[in-house]
Image (cartoon, rainbow, N blue to C red):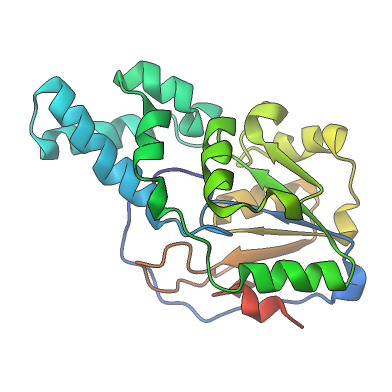
Length: 235
């Protein structure tokens, strides 16, 4: 998932919709970062626990009060560019968010089978692109930990596009930066709202990540083909 805050809820159990494409029909793969390639536990812990703890200490309030206030504040800009803008949150919360992210960057982890998948894509000649809502500073912090940047033809943050991926117009603008054939591009993301936005724009091949966080159970989409790990795409 590209959003930094999940507000975890008990998932509704659903049956898996299997993937429905062949690699012969795909030239490019667009990949989300947080929750898709990287374990979203880092983001959930950071925004739901670490930031409230630091906010509570700075403002001399109890952690429960700080957490309730911040979760409400986060929601006020959900699905906008501000949602993942580290500079915006630093100004709004009076904290150095990028510095705090680096303090707990040891928690950044790849999901299982990511490198296996990348190696397979290289063997069969598919081009990989990172398409993320993450702020450029977040991208820099995470790439410093996991070193995935060399696998991608290009990495694009939503700030470069000027819209969040949840907005269907995002995909039209992306065409101006990175022309692609919608019929021969696969897009993989852990957020159903983002997948719906891509489908609305005309993207045909979509895959949902059913386990964005290692600390949460698998939760298949009711609308999109889902995978629990990238091992399911090694065919």
